Length: 259
Image (cartoon, rainbow, N blue to C red; front, side, top):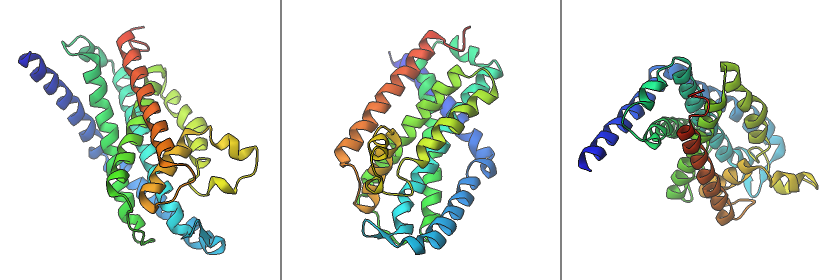
């Protein structure tokens, strides 16, 4: 038993370390772009357009969009890290070496997801530091803030894994972020309160899972949200459970790997 635990731990630590070193080695491509993009968002939407909008839910517009912009970088980077990395592993044909090793599939999955979660956390910390140059919002619930970041990064890391499993070319890796993830993010209440929408758009917005994640994070930072925090956290838990189960099941079946 102890030998098995030690073997699994070494395997997990090796994969996780490889994943973290992979994106840290090219930090100018993985960590710097979110800073530039977020700075532009704050300058254009927060400073220029925000002055015309005024306040939203009792906060200056720049302060109001800050949580959404931070979470948007977490979503994008956690997803991209796992989807590109695992597909590269398939493309380079060294996934077979891990599959024939005496380790369970969930160890492999955990190693890749750790890389995505760590990248999501790092980008969140960097973007938050940048945000404080434009805002002065105190964190209302710091522990909840970190929990929401972790859960959101875990959801989209596992979603990126599912994308990589089914991807047959590098173009397939970018289809979901371009045509699904980006629209859902922009329509997820990052730049506005869903209460401003009329019907049927407000009702349709509640079918967007990212809306619940953005509102959970906005509540943890500002203390206000369009959706009760209990509902948002429940949705997060449901998606974490669903994507983790699906990822583990696909890996166990060898979908997209053993064919």
